[in-house]
Length: 270
Image (cartoon, rainbow, N blue to C red; front, side, top):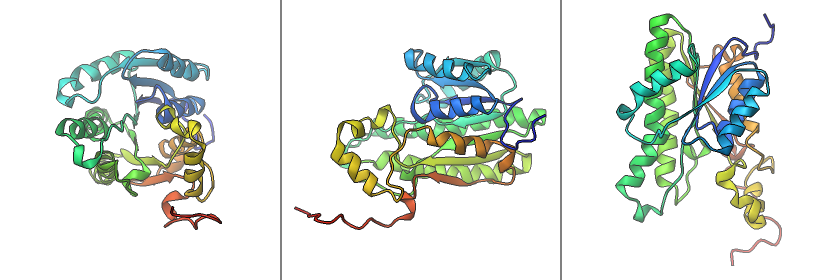
């Protein structure tokens, strides 16, 4: 047995939204730490197969299940849990990463858009955690749950009203689930990225002015790749974090600690 508290050998993880971006980075990092990894994605495409292949390249078992998690949970949860058990029984690490940003401006927000955001960003993780917890408690498993939150659960943007609401709910949910599940030896925490480079933020690679602006608003001066999220995920799911419950760890280069940057020399509001 390894003496490293960060070693995840012998564990089996499920990562929702694990086919690209932050989810894929988490899945690969867990595989490098020794955990088997089952990825849940919206579709089986090249990105999904690449994410699975990366995990397998680390010498662990990995697979893919497709499911639209934006649907009402009672429409798919029972069948999804059956498919998960068939594909990779014995999962003890749950990573609720699936999420979306599809907001129009607030005055144009529709019930459909708001509900889809909440269903995927909040409800899917809530009810997956419930389903796994029931199994873990019945079998005496000390499961570990990690949510992907966001700096938007703490800091707001004018055209992110539904998204910000959902990520604020995730932060509150992590605290509530901690209180409900810690007595059962189940740990629940959240890893909340700031701005990182993913397919959903590719505009940064196309717009240098915007990229420079976001770096200015980050004390570290960096907008890194999503891989920076992987190590925090491994830590929070590992034995090294055995007494960490109900916390949100911001992986944001210090952005959430800074009220606002000083304007650069020569800056003008014109």
